[in-house]
Image 1: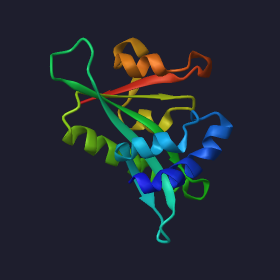
Image 2 (image 1 turned 180 degrees about the vertical axis):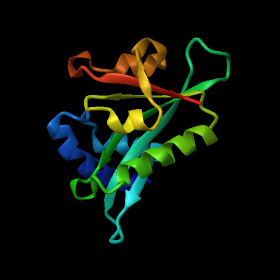
Image 3 (image 1 turned 90 degrees about the vertical axis):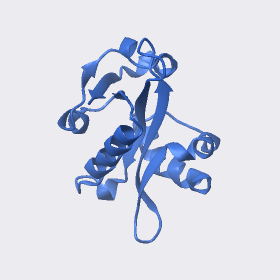
Image 4 (image 1 turned 45 degrees about the vertical axis):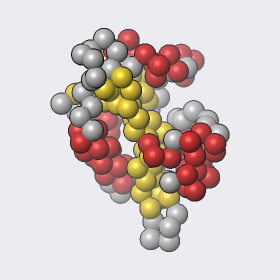
Length: 148
């Protein structure tokens, strides 16, 4: 929800500082709030989030779409608990329900979780053009794809 934008930004901040995520202003989280699946703690705070956005699938059949997983993070106290795997599974289910032909992500980390969930290395050239052009080459992120 747009009213969770500040909480999404706060959850993401430690990952921005470490270089794992790109910095995004609160206004961007608010504008794209519908992209996010969140993990909420019993007290209402956010313990994790993942963005899932659809793009026209460049170079494929007209009307086909691809998805991008972005801004995926889990609070430090929930890491190792399966929270990230649960969020990623929810994103995969949502992507399939939206009939997305492929799902892309970019990561500066080990990519282990993505690889365990069927993602494989690819190049940005296979990804939706507008998303691929937004990648910062200085970050040296690995681009991954998951198809069905």
